[in-house]
Amino acid sequence: MILKGANNREMGTVTVIDHPLVQHKLALLRDKNTGPKEFRELVDEISTLMAYEVTRDLPLEEVEIETPMQKTRVKMLKGKKIGVVPILRAGLGMLDGVLKLIPAAKVGHIGIYRDPDTFEPVEYYCKMPTDVDERELIVIDPMLATGGSASAAISFVKERNPKGIKLMCLIAAPEGVERIQKDHPDVDIFTASVDERLDENAYIIPGLGDAGDRLYGTK
Ligand code: PRP
Ligand code: URA
Figure 1 (tube, rainbow, N blue to C red):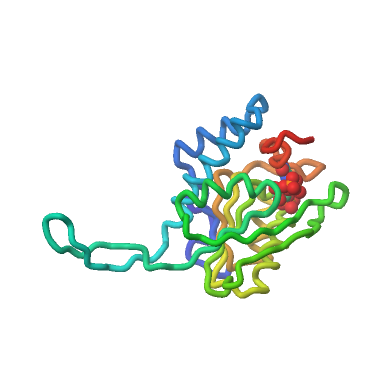
Figure 2: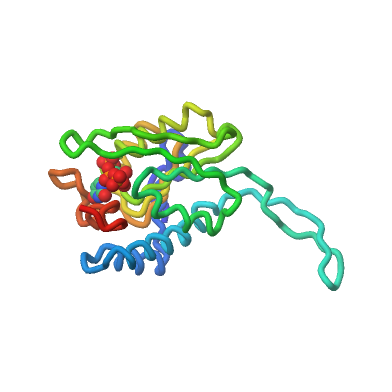
């Protein structure tokens, strides 16, 4: 389901991946009784399913192969280079799920946490592949709340001139979507849900709580 800006490059699109398997697994993920082991497994599975949709526009080319019966022309990926960029920590939980479908992708890491008082992003780590300028990047983070962390991460990677950037999250707040569309109108967003709102602590409502803490069993 594409919500906004479908044909308008002045604003990135927001695609809500409403596949029943994604929605079912997201419901389990939200449940407060889901423990870290199951939570990690669900994030991994949802990320794989979402990566299928996020890569839907990868270009194909016709090549000739030989089946046991005869020569034939088939479609294969054109060899577009992809980079996956998890925002640490919680984005790491999505990485393996995405790499299952795009195993040749290179991985860049960006460490950002949200200051608990100001909600402003604080950057603490960045290590990117050297050839980012030849790659389409998929930035991954389960939660798009105020959008501050994702916006900062995208600004960071833009300095290395990637060929394009997509943002993939599991749950977005309307405020976060608006922030990315304003700061980075060239970036399309893929999410499994756009939730109701942020609360006074800038947590997503209904959301799933703190993604990093639930993934890693911290508090
Ligand atoms: C969470 C989440 C995002 C950020 C979203 O990370 O994984 O990175 O908050 O909030 P925002 O859209 O308002 O910036 P957190 O700061 O909890 O760090 P962690 O992943 O290391 O736990
Ligand atoms: N970070 C999270 O992990 N969850 C939220 O709801 C907001 C920010």
